[in-house]
Each structure stands twice: as C-alpha cells, then as structure tokens.
Image 1 (cartoon, rainbow, N blue to C red):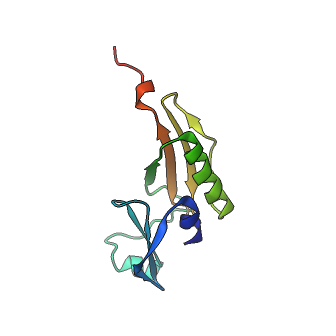
Image 2: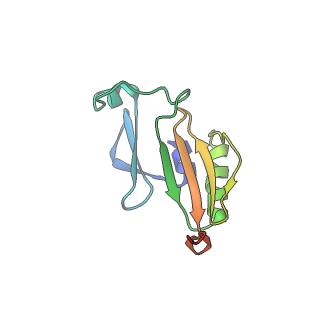
Length: 119
C-alpha cells in the first residue's frame, strides 16, 4: 500500500481488509490490491507472472511534467523500479514505473496543442 500511496493514491478503508486494499486515484479510478488467493477467486484465467511478462499497461494522465517527475520519484523512493528513461514525444512526456509485482504504470503529461498536425 505504501508504494501506491507514494504515487498519490489514497486508501478507501470501506473496501479494504487483510486480503485486499482499495486504492483511489480519482472519483472514477480505483485500484484493488489483493493477495493472490483472493484475486484467484475473481480470476477466470491463471494469474500472470508480471515480474517476467507484461500483462497490461496502466496509464495515468497528470497536469504537468513536474507532476510526472514527482509521482515517479516518490514511487522510486517507495521501492518501485523505472525500466527505462523518460520518453519525450514533443507533445507528450512519459515515464514508466513498476510496482513490486512488476505491474507497469505509464505516468504522462500531454499538451495536445503540440500534437503534430495531419497533412
């Protein structure tokens, strides 16, 4: 839970217990952190080994490059890993951080006014 708190999530104790924690990013974005035992009771497929295989990318859009850097820096201090350097696409800056289980988060800032125009 400390890793996700460092990223900026808050805990919703109403939906948390010793087998799972409900972490809230915004009014519409919630993350459930569960033990494998509890998660397997919901899963319809085998649980992926996300330390060695990519199971999905989760993206969080923020309001500035500084916020991207603060979130990733705080996540690194909480034990996360950054598998590559910041990517700068001109209109979007993106950093990647992985949690202890290897779940991959893309934190990005986008200035759509800098998006290349189609000709």
